[in-house]
Length: 173
Image 1 (cartoon, rainbow, N blue to C red):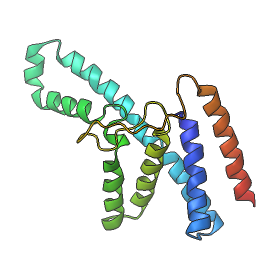
Image 2 (cartoon, rainbow, N blue to C red; image 1 turned 120 degrees about the horizontal axis):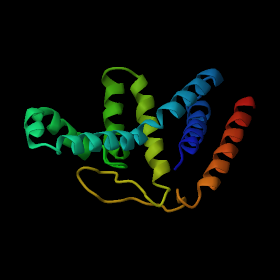
Image 3 (cartoon, helix red, strand yellow; image 1 turned 180 degrees about the vertical axis):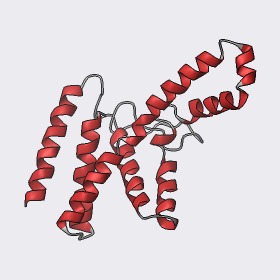
Image 4 (cartoon, rainbow, N blue to C red; image 1 turned 135 degrees about the vertical axis):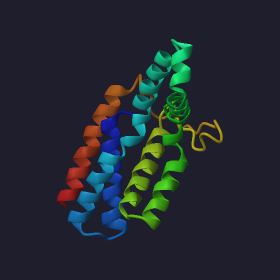
């Protein structure tokens, strides 16, 4: 799913949840929905981290001496490659649980991170690529194939514009 559609859907759904269900005031609901809309793209940075770590791995593997000299760094790179496989850990239920617990015990702002990650993986489950909700414990994929990123990119762009218009219209009511 494209970033703009993630942000539009997450902001719109968050506003509805906080304003209509939790009865927050309008300004607080708008601020919270914008924050969640910004946070909801974080899970997709796994792709960038994975690519960076893969380049580091290739550079270290060019020389056995370098691999041994940088062994702790090499292990860290292997850890990143395992953890940040695209649609892996960041698209599972574990970050949601971690952020929820951080919100419970440390700062309430982490509840918004938990909500943003939850909305993100629900939205990504609607694509043909799906999600792995229990990664790294299981490679089981959950898919509701409504959107295809390669074929429906324009549809997703138009859908994001429509949802943004609905979001601004509902705010103005």
